[in-house]
Length: 72
Image 1 (cartoon, one colour):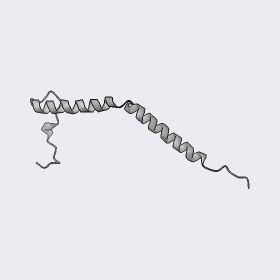
Image 2 (image 1 turned 90 degrees about the vertical axis):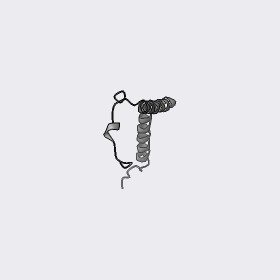
Image 3 (image 1 turned 120 degrees about the horizontal axis):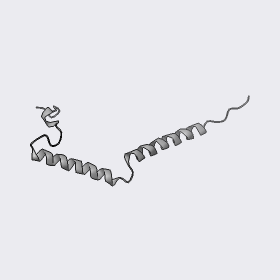
Image 4 (image 1 turned 60 degrees about the vertical axis):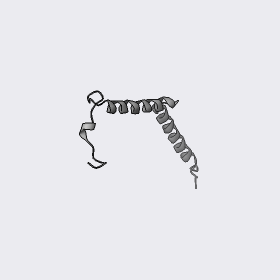
């Protein structure tokens, strides 16, 4: 099998495979993801909300840079 080929037997839910090494690796990967998630003081929702607020603020600045219409 090439490296890019996906083995369907590896796409099982935890607890459905009798492979302690695979289960250990999955648990370790999940622990790393959880630790990274908890290391952030902001939640993903808060980060997304702040990014959207920043975009709105930048858009408002662009609009405010447009000179007022003149009556000529």
